[in-house]
Length: 292
Image (cartoon, rainbow, N blue to C red; front, side, top):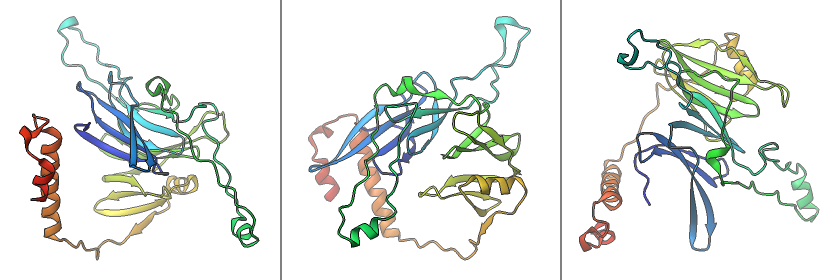
């Protein structure tokens, strides 16, 4: 069935899991995970609700074994009123906290990623049988109860999870009128992560990460800055070292109006198919209407 009011999509690196951020039946925002499995008949989809509809969960980031997201379930009204029950509208500060949801059956070990065989080419040339690595197995039962807050990261006006891999958690945060990039890194497994101070970046318009997770980027004052997705790069930023700058002055966008009109037609047809008040379309052959 169609999901209304989709706010965000995040695809797992192996292409088998899709996180859909969308509106719940009430006024909150939730995350649903779609497990994609290839079969002879096409692709089978298993939909599982991952977060509760008692609060909002937004801005999902999928690492290899964990789903990270923001949630406002810990908001606290810090305004005390002398008027008792006639208090003005509540005022909430720093509403978003960072949560993690293990996607595998063993939350302690999380997941064991098989080591790559660096001698595959040599083994193949010698006629040796190659050993395939085991696929990552997701466990999608009781997801809502399995998420937990990363308590070492304070709540804040966070707007983006840039990355959350290999112990490095990188967040975009707004403090007043300034946008900042803040990182937490866990040096030793089992120890409390430490905060890595990052220089304040004013005028950040957008932040994101590349599909291969190798780089993250910022758009600042209409300029594109690219950073390596590593703790070393983050530490250089904290020391004031200039980032990489992508020259975009000569970039051009090729527009084909015919294709855009076709896409507009397709979207209008799809919206009527998914949300028309009569599921039978009053007997109209809707697929045939699209062809006509």
